[in-house]
Amino acid sequence: MEQTHGGVEDCSVSGFESAEKVIIRWDATASEEAREKMIFNDPNEVKLYLNAVDEIQKFVSSSSAGDIENRANSAIQIAMARLEDEFRNILVCHSSPINSDSLMLSSSSSRLEVDDDGTSSNNGNEDDDQQEEEETDLLKRSSSSASTGSAAVRLPTGRGSYSRSTSSIREIELIPIESVVHLSWIARRMVSAGYLRECIQVYGSVRKSAVDSSFRRLGIEKLSIGDVQRLNWEALEQKIRRWIRAAKICVRVVFASEKLLCEHVFESVGAVNIHEACFMETVKGPAIQLFNFAEAISISRRSPEKLFKILDLHDALIELLPDIESVFDLKSSDSIRVQAAEILSRLAEAARGILSEFENAVLREPSRVPVPGGTIHPLTRYVMNYISLISEYRPTLIDLIMSKPSRNSTDSNTPDFDFSELENNKGPLALHLIWIIVILQFNLEGKSKYYKNAALSHLFIMNNAHYIVQKIKGSPELREMIGDLYLRKLTGKFRQAATYYQRAAWVKVLYCLRDEGLHTKGSFSSGVSRSALRERFKSFNALFEEVHRVQSQWLVPDSQLREELKISILEKLSPAYRSFLGRFRSHIESGKHPENYIKISVEDLETEVLDLFEGYSATQHLRRRSE
Image 1 (cartoon, rainbow, N blue to C red):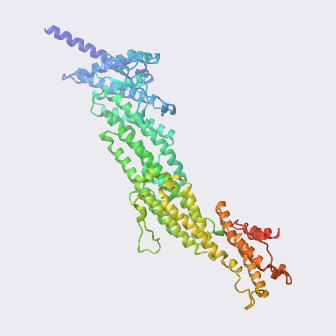
Image 2 (image 1 turned 90 degrees about the vertical axis):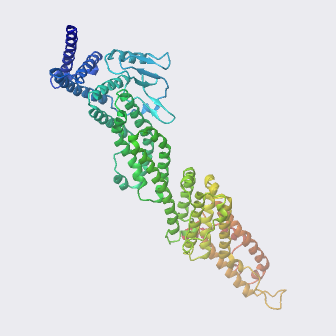
Image 3 (image 1 turned 90 degrees about the horizontal axis):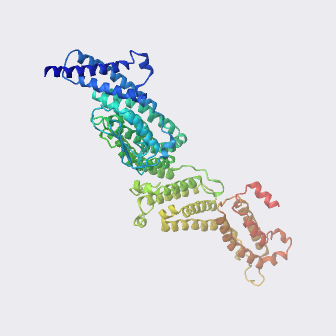
């Protein structure tokens, strides 16, 4: 029995010494050849080396003492240093940034399992092509039959890859199958020998560099929150557009694929949660870098022009949130999920704040210089274009705007408006849009007072109210939100302004065409005062000439409204003048120099009215009068 026991020990010692020679032969500190070559480039050497490491490990973990154990500890240190180099080399050789073509990979549901000894079984289609067979043969040739443990490296999909996809997440192959298996074999032995920390550091360092390279390819810059907030808005708009596109790829492809790679490299290692640690070592820094940009936007100074890009960011992030929660579903990645959720909340709050500040800005817009010709004020164009865009973001803003607008009833500088009749069928967002129009009109009423000509003041209100109505009618989304009830009120507003304009501009002209004051007392048959009639014609000519001179410089930019207003004027003026001429022409023509009093025919009057509201300059007006 003693001799038998001795024979076993001799055999073990012999195996140890053979393994030790293999380890020492690949000691890069002692051999030039070992420094120049890599073990995992040669399948036969892989098998020999891994067997040797496993053999040495038996003696390290045994309870025996003495020279053998010391030599085993020394050999395992050499082996771990070597395996760390091999581990790093494999990772570095496959650390290129993700190819854009990879983003178009199709999904597959079959799975390829490669056991620890390199044998494979395909649980997918039976007719896999030659590429898969060649890869499987390669794995067989590089197998290590003496590997410890029985866990398998699972490689989903049936074309010799481990990519997979869901409806939005697309996990792609970052490292070829055989290299993934090699990494798994190395990781298992490093962890078993107590080199877990070194393994995680090497893996995280190399893969993080690969992620950084992908970030650069996607145009994601390393900007601190301060850097982002110092950029001008025009530059930020471009970066936000780029970030939205890139963030989807980062979460759904880059981070998801890194997570899958970690799972397949480390799932058979045996250490608890090692794949989680490696995943976070790889992506935590890049993830924070990615989301810091959105966070910087969410806490930046609020201004109206930022609203729509903030809403774009909000929509992109809310769309990504389920994917973020899926990719970062580990306990160790709680901070990433929390950061994304907090950014989303801050973006929502920023959007609400900007809308409120926009309302105040419209109300307080201070310009006092009247726009020439009573045309549409730039503020009106800006505000209506702005709320038209708001209506296009209706699905998002309906969820964000939860409270109706409020006004300070004691502030005389805010309009008095009763929302009660609208509240029953209008949500908070629609009420805010109506309120913006109310305060816009309130501001415009104030600006109209800076015109010295009352008629021009009314024309200004008419032009702007009409523009507001047309913008609402031109946007189905905005019209639906504003509603026909309030739209009818706005339509009445510009029609009322048109009526007020005509009264202010033409009442004196029409007053000249009345009969009162032209007849001498007691002589109705022929008792027309020729001198009074001449003065009346002179007054009419002077007033009409002045109205024409002034109002041909005014502007009604909407062609249909312009023609309607001219027709309305002529419907009152033309019949009145024709009738006046018919009654009194003979009295003037029978006297001296009738041309000094009847200076314009009905036809000429109608032609000159058609010149109104074209925005002519004074020089253009004179030129047209002389033609």
